[in-house]
Length: 77
Image 1 (tube, rainbow, N blue to C red):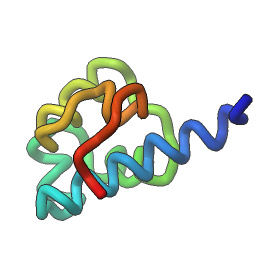
Image 2: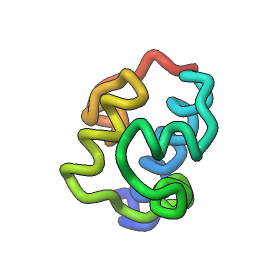
Image 3: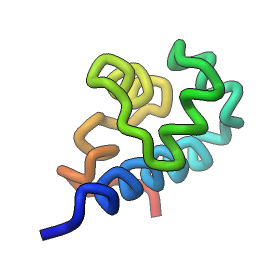
């Protein structure tokens, strides 16, 4: 079983990869997702976003929340 901290870091890694694949800065991605830049940075470092925030993040990046959670394969390399 994967430790909970590692799962959070994996979600943060997926958020960061999807943001970079979308060509967005943290500031622009945060604005598009309607979260603060500080919150966005924390998510990329492993803080767990609330479900509503995760949905907005996924839409802002053009990916599914399931892909960010690692439940389905993502298209980012």
